[in-house]
Length: 131
Image (cartoon, rainbow, N blue to C red):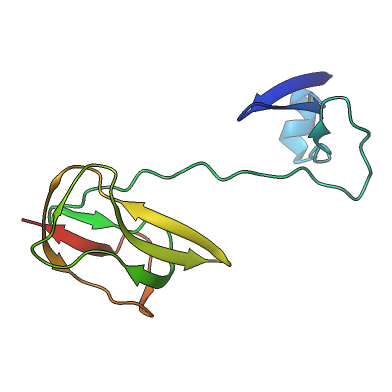
């Protein structure tokens, strides 16, 4: 079965194989589809570009911002006492050679910055606390 999927304004044609119920029971899996923008030829070794969607930053139990990923802090853009607006960049984390800007989920005042540039952080670790 062939499907057309549009992601962030880019159309992709995808071949999908529907498994029979007996295939699912035996653990047989369909091969992964090769994806290419609509109207373009598909080369067997080519894979489609994948755009990462922004991950909302969760406010932890401490009234702080938790890291959505494990990585290394590249830059801290705020300090204790700073007033921030919703969506304002607080810090930047690098993971797998990609930089992720961590934004304030709401307006408030920074109570404490719990990390510094160069620190390794784990997923769900509290990075910044709000007053």
